[in-house]
Amino acid sequence: MEDEVRVAINTDADLVTARAEGRAMAERLGFPRPDPTLIATAISEVARNIVVHVGCGEIVLRPFEDANRYGVVVIAKDKGPGIRDDYSGKGSLGLGLPGARRLMDDFDIASSADSGTTVTMRKWRFRDELAERREERRRRA
Image (cartoon, rainbow, N blue to C red; front, side, top):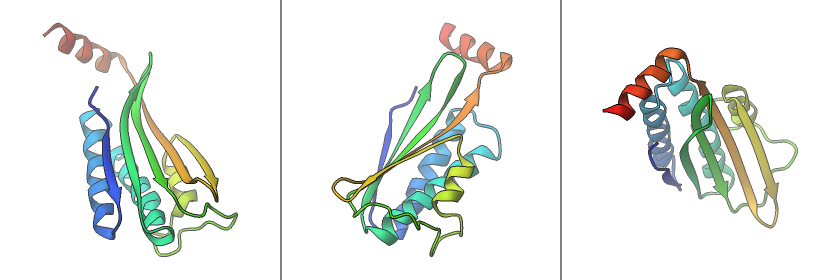
C-alpha cells in the first residue's frame, strides 16, 4: 500500500490540492467511477469547513486494508473552537459535513473547544474475485 499523504489547509487553493490527492489515491487503489469523485467532494467539504471556520488545519489521506476490503481514510484536523450543534454547508457546495457523511461509508467527528475538531471518513472497496486475482499476480511478479 502507498504511504499517507498530508495536505496543509490554509487557503481555498489547498482545497484543490487535497481534492486532487484524494482522487488520485482512490484511482490508484482501483476505486470505480464515481467513487474517486465522491471522495474528492467529501474532502472539499471538510477542507472548506477548515478554511471558513478555523483558517488552517490539515487533511491526511491514508490507504487502508483488511481481509476483504480496502479503502481510503480521510482525516481532517483543525485546532479551532470545536463544532456547535448547528453545523451546515455555509459557503460551500451546499453539502457541508452532513453531505460529506452521506458520500462516505464511515464518518466520525471528535470535537471540543480545547482540542479542535477531527473528522475521520472512510470509503471502502470490497475485493471481488477479479481484484484478488490481480493482486495475487502482482505479488508473484
